[in-house]
Length: 442
Ligand code: LLP
Image (cartoon, rainbow, N blue to C red):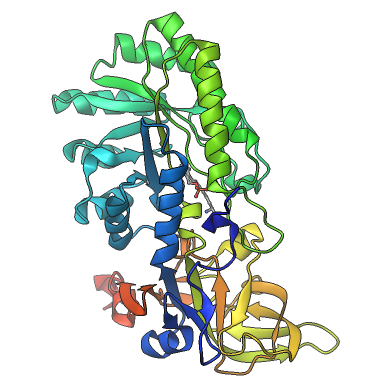
């Protein structure tokens, strides 16, 4: 079956140019470093578009289909604009993500608001801006939302988020669909939730069920299973409460290729499994085929993004490791220290050098665990070399911090030899702009 871009380590436009340098989106990575300084996030627009196309074509034959981008993976006004152009909706999980979408002029009817503890202010923002769907996670939220909606004389379309009880083999922190999870209604609580909406929370209109099974998934069977669990519940709800739900949202989760050991399925492969499950289980449970929403995040932006760093100091531990320090680290990419995530890198101006050694790429933060890549074989590094770490496009910038008061990097998008800033580099004045010295100390 045809490969899709989530199965490659490199962004699709990456190549070695005439100068022998790494090029992404037609832009020489060394020149990008000179122009914008480092650390720098570089997003290959061609890869993002190619992935979006793969999703659209893989599900083409299922007419009632709405792909959404899980904006938590990389949320900026640029992404909103690009996703809107691609016909994708958005999954948002906070007031901040919602605000970004609003300010970018996103079509509100194509936004789903997820999250296990939305505040009243956040729900209000969603209602005031006529958001498409709210995925209600728990009993408190049902009550709050109904109350707010009634006070505003509005009716709201919702999903009920469920915990489908499906385990997938990924890092424990990024599993969400197994039974012992903080997200969603347990299946045993679903009847009560439906009953409450029917009898009491009359401003809420249940359009369908929503589940998300986890992230960085390599198995296809879990997608078959989640569709089946949802259809089975829809059939039960129809039978027991005479409510015919029309929609299902099966979340995101498709994995990407951080290293050669990662073997995610293609988008076509998961689409085939999902559509097969929809067809056979709709028949099995006597349900009309519902509208299908998916909300991938990592697979849309992960492969597209790379981070470029400049090499600084190095240290050879006698009879031990050689550490080479980069000018960023856990503040621009906390994933290695949080999840033991493993990445692949090249030296942008020495891609073909045979003079190699095994080094550990360390960050610049005051923390021993601040390592970007452990024990990687790279051409011998010298101060000033430019290292490019691949697959940082998802959950890199989104989880970045100012730890050690390190400034957040700039992000650019590249295509056809053009680079454009999509996030400006933070300045020291911006960094301290929220600090307040109380009167008694000034
Ligand atoms: N939908 C819901 C309800 C989610 O909770 C998530 C991710 C997604 C969609 C998108 O999943 P994706 O397609 O990106 O796998 N920070 C972690 C990942 C946490 C994912 C949380 N939820 C990491 O860096 O690996």
